[in-house]
Structure formats: structure tokens, C-alpha cells
Image (cartoon, rainbow, N blue to C red; front, top):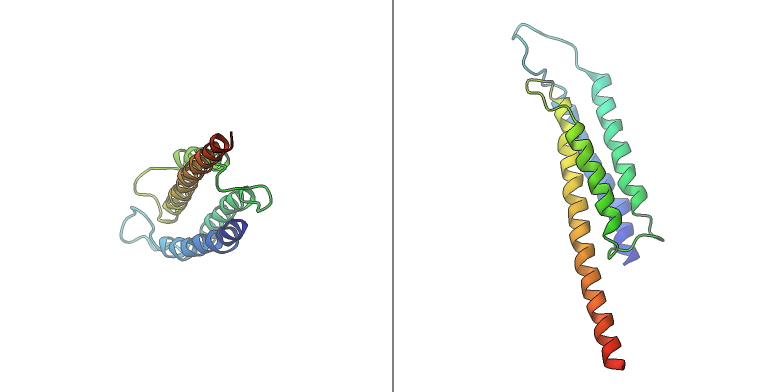
Length: 142
């Protein structure tokens, strides 16, 4: 079980972040709703800030999945992180006609919310299965 958590921690989390970095770079080319004559420079600083923000959010999940203390049947910890991601998602600016890089973090938070939701559901299923197996064996031994 620890090998699965380690694989998620060291492979899946960086893979999700790396998948969103090109999206942030491409979204930086979308200036939003501006007149066609507007030709501003590429927002390098803003795109880097979005990529760093996504890295920090990934580190939250990375820290949550410490292999020695996290078990997949523990569904409360990913539920707490899911709550934080949902809160952060609703605090994101959701105005229309903004530059493209503004929307990248919202999509990133949505993706992580789905990952945390799957951890919560998986943890509930594993805890119910392991609980029923334990109670069944306890009743059988008595």
C-alpha cells in the first residue's frame, strides 16, 4: 500500500503539475477581451506566478501523502484538502474576458479536487471493506 502512495506522491503529483505548465504557457498568449489592435508583450511574470502557485498547491497534496502516516483507508485527510481546494477554487477570479493565464489555476484546482474526491471515495470504500472484514473475523472468532 505504501508503494502505491509513493507512486502517487512522486509520479502522479509532478505529472499533473507538468501537464498544466504547457497549458499555462499557451494560455498566456490569450490576451482576453481587448481591441484587436492591442499587441502587448507576453506576460512572462504572470505565467511564472501561475506556475509557482500550482507548484505550491501540489506541495500541499504532496505533504498530505507522507508515506509513513497516510493510509488510503484514511479518508478524512483528503477530505480536508478537498475542502481547501474547493474553497480556493471559489476564491479564484471568475470574471469573463480576462487573460487566459487567469483561468489555468481554476482548472488545476478542479483537477486536484477530482483527485482528492477519488481519494475520499477510495478511502471510504477501503475503510468499509476492512471494517467489515475485521468485524466478520471478530464475530467468527467469538
